[in-house]
Length: 170
Image 1: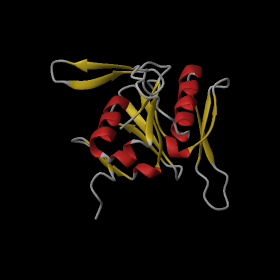
Image 2 (image 1 turned 90 degrees about the horizontal axis):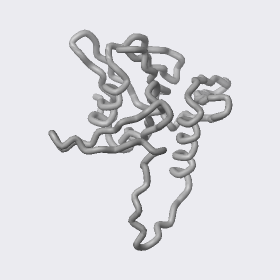
Image 3 (image 1 turned 30 degrees about the vertical axis):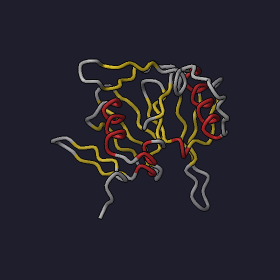
Image 4 (image 1 turned 180 degrees about the vertical axis):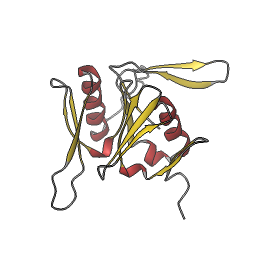
C-alpha cells in the first residue's frame, strides 16, 4: 500500500500517474502539456497538465520532506534538487546524476543564465548553516528573487516566477 503524501499523484479524467518523487529528475513544460523525465531514463511525454499545475500538485499532495526536493527553474522546469550534479550558468547547463552501480549516466538540460545562478545560490544557501543576527528583520526576496504576493480574494499566496528565477516548492 502506498503511503499518503509520499506519492506524487497526477490525475485527470483521461490519465492518472502515481510517481515516487525520488524517481523524478525534472518536469519540462511543453505548451499546455508537460514531459516528466524519470531517473531510470523513461520519459512520460505529453502529460495533459501544465507545469504550474504539477507544481501545485507537488505542494498539495506531497509531505514537506518531498516538496523540498523540488524547485521551479524559470517557467519551463521543475527540477529535483537531490539529483543535481552540475550547474554551469555560463554554458546554461544543468546536469542530473542518475548513477547506478556500474554506470555513469546523466541527463542535461538548458536554462537561462540568471535562473541557474539563482539555483546555484539557493543550493549553496541550503547546504551552509546560517547564523541569524538578533533584531535583523529585513525581508529578502525568497529563493532567488521570485515575487510573492497575496491574492486578497481567497487569501492564498501566489508566486509570479519569470524565466530567470527559481522557486523552491514546499
